[in-house]
View 1: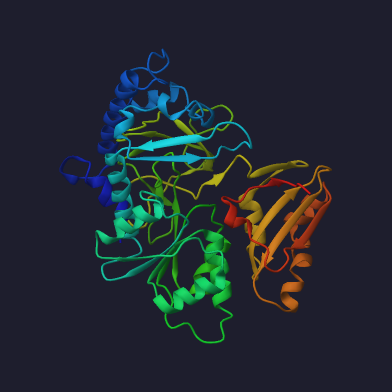
View 2: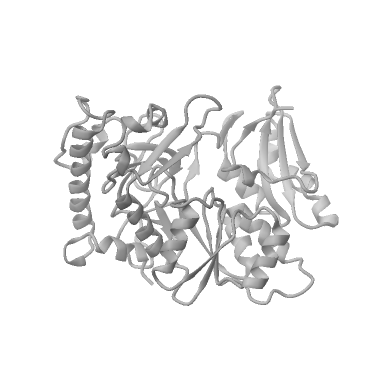
Length: 429
């Protein structure tokens, strides 16, 4: 079945006829509307000689300056294009540094409706009328992601089952057995931990979910495959950020890349060092410009996430571009000897081994690397996991350049997935 984001895009195009030229014409108009808005209403963008009020071709966008995380630290007021009283929701986010001001992102009622619309179409890839969806995401605030997702699900006859972050696998397993959701939405490693835990239950699970949506972090192909095996379901991948309005791209049933939210955002993939666009198939940093945002439009915002545009047409027959699953560049890479260790490389190595449900790479002051792993279950096989990891090609390559230890987290230790996105972290005793 064709991606539901194709149908969402069709709503914005004349006659509902989707083609790449028609989409680009629509997006050029959206970019120019955003440029005109920020030129006249945004304290940050107004008066800047390098931000024109309009462009003639989308290719000219590559000549405009980026908006960065540091720019957002200036404050919400510098970016607002509506009156403060018209802001329906403000989200405060920590920045990548440990000190300094946080980022604050504002949304209008219209912006929130656009988020709900994206969630409604995106979730139809994995749920339908009469089904039940367990929302395993943190937060209870009005207009938070769980609330908006629940609202979107109800618009097409799906019953939301709010749960919260999956940090207690035993409690989550009981919830799944009792409520029997058809679909579960949660953090990737939390779903992996739940799958591993449920495989050890003494009694058979009454009903497995049909689908799951992995969101909020990098998704390794090995992790996704283990979730599918462990929960006897089909797994989908979602990518988004608060800055882009929570939703940015989602899998279709063909799993050949993530389909983009093209009706609300214009995406670029640029070289992380030069800032110039890279061709399809080449990895680069994802950049977006909002097309329909009213409260806080952004021009060429650097996400800090690495991805690449998929050049081939998806088997679902949508002609629109897709991206590979993004991963965090800042805090997700480390130069070791003559090569660069990235979080996806580490994940591919670690999650290829059954029994490991999470990992964290620590960097000590003396440059010693400590790979901490979390496991579910007990037995000789799990006890041998540190040695098996040390024998992998990747870890042997690391150990040739730096001291490396592999340790198992103590029983009951909270996994790093409860603390946000997984990154390489400095070790503090």
